[in-house]
Length: 201
Image 1: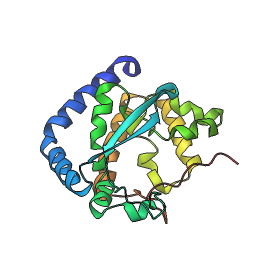
Image 2: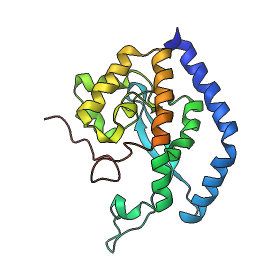
Image 3: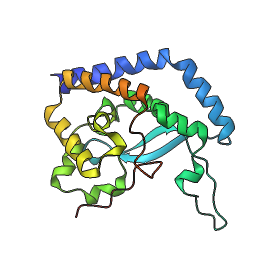
Image 4: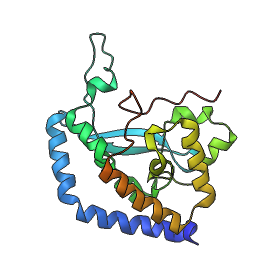
């Protein structure tokens, strides 16, 4: 019953409450990013959702569009602004995803939506992460986030799929708040973002 109905109800309810409470902060970040990113405060990217269906995730834009002499984007570390780094550390860059939740593409809790290019690289076990909607936070995020390997991340994702319940979602939600306050595990060692998944050995 929770998985079929109440999870969606709670997603909508909590998202509307958060959108109302944090509207001033949302607008403040929006204004700052409009100035820092030449009028482009949001970052849109195609991601696979439930059953691999593609949707466009929305985040606050934490990197500039600076390019080299050949017209190629500079490395992530060179484009990540100090303000963008702070947004990532506090997970506030994820705030606009409340719109994805209200639309029904995402849930508050679930496996994080990754890149479409990873879809053909998954084995049968890893593909099971797409049996539920992706979330703004998940079991992998409260158990290491970007500091763990891809294999560990996928194991946590599939474990969540098999054990999805109200109490597990509540536990993950509370642990996520603790992680945000502590600002832990936001980056993989030697990377400003998680290194790309290149497939299984």
